[in-house]
Length: 434
Image (cartoon, rainbow, N blue to C red; front, side, top):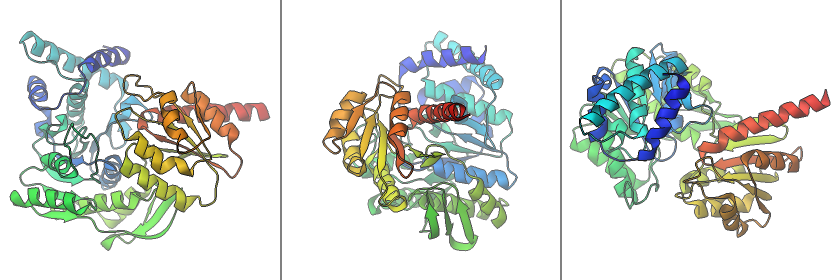
């Protein structure tokens, strides 16, 4: 099987959609020899910030000399970035080989009359096979949807259950209230693990603490970091015993995410993992996580952010008002139909001089550019539905003056296209000047 054939096969599996529950993934992994049982995990659940907590934690641990697997979704730059060891994407040939093994296992399941796995379950199995093959010391594992019934929750050997910020999202799927959603996500807590949380609302904190204490586990909630300086390029801060730290990830939420990662480091130290303060400083400084207030161009300034729900939009607005007071803002916006797009528009669009709306690559889930434009027009009169992401980037950059800021936000799924379009336009502009 080639890499292209592997991608075609997985695209075919996507017709099964998303199914919560562990029975199918349990059957698939049994066919594959249960590779996850030979691995140890740092399991991360939450609504916003999971990826950033994962990036900080895994980079610090790699700097400390451990071989670290990463499993993330969705991706921004490449499909392959969802499975990494020490920040390196899985090679195409290994991905193809392991996909073939998973395909054969699924064929045996289907022949026995068992339910066919979803694409996420297949990808999760591929990841576990690869991490075992790479002999990872720890795998930092991002939950997909919720926690308790998410395919990643098949793991048993959880060293740390970590919770990024939890807010309302996937309402009616994993819960109807904030407390129900927190209960679902708390399902990743396993006997004997450390339980660490980012700063949470009181009701969420009580759910997580209660679950941990009912299992005889200590619960640690991260405190507030002390920020000394920040702008769109990064943040200088301190946290407890770790001293002066610098993160290249900007945004008002990032010290919350970094604090959760640092509390995870403290828990791992208590377990005997050797992680020096210098490992921590290097790890925080080297952390890269695309699509989180990421600057891809400075002339004019173009930023990308995956704010796709109310809580994330509030943090993004706070960041934009802090970093760019008085600057003219031009937005590119694309969201899924099942997200809180009206609330996101209420929060963000009054800041904008103009908004360019786009349809997302996933045509089944996208809110079309025209429908989004109608929603946005009630908050910002200067809005245009664009025919493509590339056209939106071209128009927004052409509109921007030297002191203006262009921000593309909403779903992470289209931000890679924004980055590619901006790089292409920049290259064409330099060629014309030459």
